Image 1 (cartoon, rainbow, N blue to C red):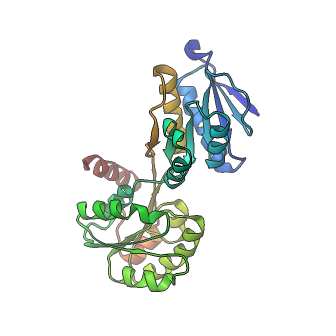
Image 2: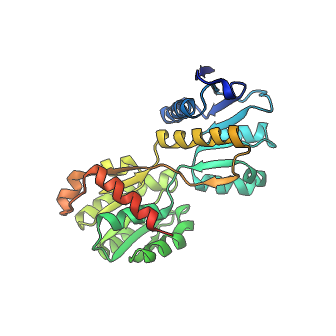
Amino acid sequence: MWVWVCCGAPSLADADVRLLLANETPYYRATADSLRHHLGRLAPGISVSIHSVANDWPAEDVLVSIGSPALTELRARYPDRAVLHLFVTSDFWREQSLRDPGLGNNTAVALDQPPQRLLTLARLLVPEAHTLSAVLGPLSSQHGAELSGGAIALGFEPRIGILAPGDNPIATLWPLISATQITVTLPDSADFNRAVARWLLQLSFRAKIPVIGFSRAYTDAGALASVYSTPENIGQQGAELVAERLAHGPFPPGLLPPRYYTLATNATVAEALGIVLPATAALQNRYAAALQEQP
């Protein structure tokens, strides 16, 4: 266990915030460090401790899990306490909620982006595109209707395919990619993501079709751009929720979308595709404005 105390005004000095990490993976630790940093600014004087195992903590302590294994551990130990869960996917949350209906009384910040954010980035970077494709897997297929509706709202003609286990990725991907002007990819299971990413990027580059991804790794590997939330982003939102909890009462229950996000672009890919990327600050401002304009 490690303990930090953020020194300052003593207004909330009696509160203790307990962070349970799933393990010592760097991105879990970075999320915890971000939460500690931002909470020190928002609520000086709060004690923040990091734990690898759940203990018998006082009822007044604020409990936060980081990572899905930490969520299940805290739910098993404290089924009746309101807990904040960070660094979990929306698919995991929905799956756990079916097994554990009481989870809906807890609060979580989704790691993955709403599909509309990827679609908005696609429209911003390739404004002349009329057709948009996506290949969905076993988990992401449940977002098909939302993705299709969002694409239509932004003026795209969506063409969405489903890749089932055992399907030939090339046979599914190529007809979609070659018939559209831009493609987006949503996160799915780790196995699906690995199987699809290689072929999606190779085939789209061959067809000179830009890809909008969901991670920095996707952009580095050949996507034109990605939108995603970093551990810093998630930790900042976690700190704000904890500060609101300490000042005003219970967390808002349910799954929340990530409040903060990061954009990444690949200048080499853009040049190869003949796409002119805005400067970083301009892109961020235009993207934020485009999101604000949506209902």
